[in-house]
Length: 257
Ligand code: MF3
Ligand code: CO
Ligand code: CO
Image (tube, rainbow, N blue to C red; front, side):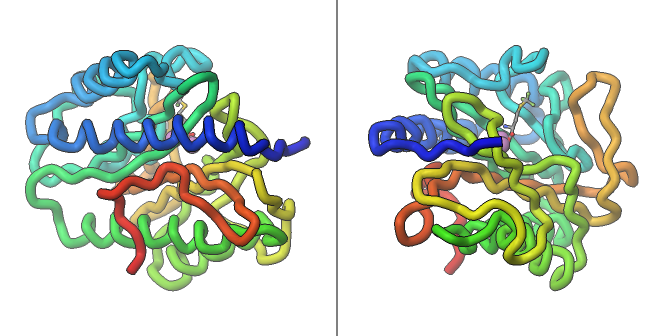
């Protein structure tokens, strides 16, 4: 499948939608508190997005019923927002995909409620660092497999977490999900070679126990089969002439020192 290379004008549109998607994470942060339901978080994000003249890409995407994904604790990804209320010690991923002027930006972040366990804190920390290990591989001439290899080495070999490889990152542009698939495990030097102007996401999912998932009866919500904790973070990345640009970066975002 062919992978498109964006023109400078298209890259500007990608920057705008990605910057906006990232701003939704800043907007929602103070609302992530004990007692709020994931459905309320979804509604807040939905209203913020449409009030800014944008559109939430997940809404009605292949039948997805809501505007963001809210993945709590054992939920790996694609959590369908609803009546579940957050409580002290919960961890939650909120995954925002916006459409601005016809272009998609996709980013997600982990949020915590009250006091979380040391195990949960470590899982989130390793997840963010693992995503960045992948990002730091990106540049012209590098292979897609370099990204997965770096993430797997760090998250699994070094820290012992499972990587859920059933879901992967993806090319992004006029559509949310485009070629190529960006696996979070890989072999160095294998897979497509990266070229300046390509845009794709890196969004590893790490679990404390096994990497096996089940899909709940809503047809979307993916949970760890052993119901242990899972975490994910996501950025949309541009391949530049000399490396990468994190299109969904925001001042408040975690970054490696
Ligand atoms: N934002 C998700 C991703 O990172 C996709 C959400 S699609 C939905 O790819 F239908 F599940 F919402
Ligand atoms: Co994505
Ligand atoms: Co996403």
